[in-house]
Length: 431
Image 1 (cartoon, rainbow, N blue to C red):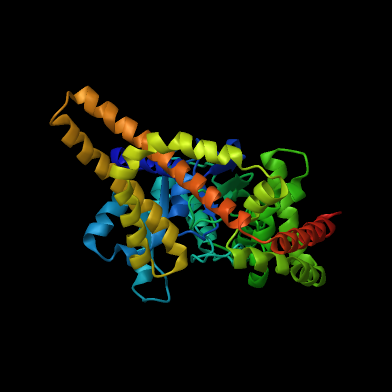
Image 2 (cartoon, helix red, strand yellow; image 1 turned 135 degrees about the vertical axis):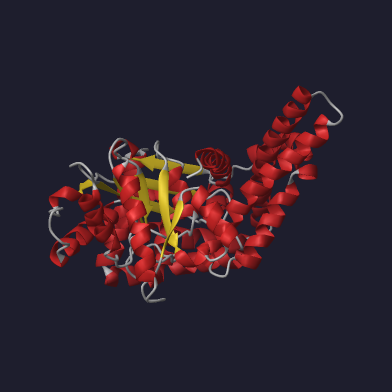
């Protein structure tokens, strides 16, 4: 791993993540071992950005295992290896992959023997789903092989992480990262004996249980829309007056578990909430604007804030917009699956903005003292952040215009269906 390149990218994507997501919540990071061999098991729904989000939180450098086909081009292979990403090959693709994976596993054992960390995705594939898919046994195999290869007797741990995205393809969404209590691998295997399939299955099942505890796991795909509709729009109904990140996770987790176990009630809830969802879609409105403007009648502050942000955002609107639109275009053109869109979009935007700021620094420095050129670039960066908030305020004002143009009957219809929706959710989640 090229440590310098790794830290540069980590710094770059730390800034990008903080700008892209309106809220990043991290729970139980203190549970992660920092001075012992560690495998980090992560659910996989947002392509390579899943790994980035974990690397941004952990104190120690983290290596990653990625699908071997992305290493086919020599340049890509060099870059990926330089930033700590190693290939893992699927057995079904080629018989030669068995031998290739032996080399990869030996490399993993060496990394772990040096008390470093490796992040893995036990599900084996990436799908944009709010559920935990069946796990492969590769994690258990790597863990057993590592114990056998250690030069001295030491403990190996597996920490399971739940990556819970709100709406990963859209700016200003949220993500909750939840770490679980480490699993001590030594309790499952005898390093002096070959891998026992029953022991491997037991560890795999325990990893699955641990991952389930730290993520929103909605089993049926047809229930994902209902789950996210309630979570995004009626979180206060779930949490009540208690404002705590752990409490929020626990209540949303309870919602997911109840959706999994009460299908009859789920169907009734869908029937009661669907009319309100359809109305929101028809008028192209979001629940938070209905609450703010139609229920509470608060809109003056949004107009004042928009005017306040407009002037300082102008430099960024003139100079800083094109990397955003180019990154968006790249993502739409190259992301063949929805799971890769967010990763490509954020990754490309981060790199393009970094390169653009270097170009601007060179241009400014050609006409101004270097210190002033640096200060201008910093000012432009903060202007860009203000411009992003200005865009959010513009969307809010646009929604207020839509609501104000609705007829009295349309407004009453929305409010009546909203009341039915809220009451149905309250009844569903009550103990």
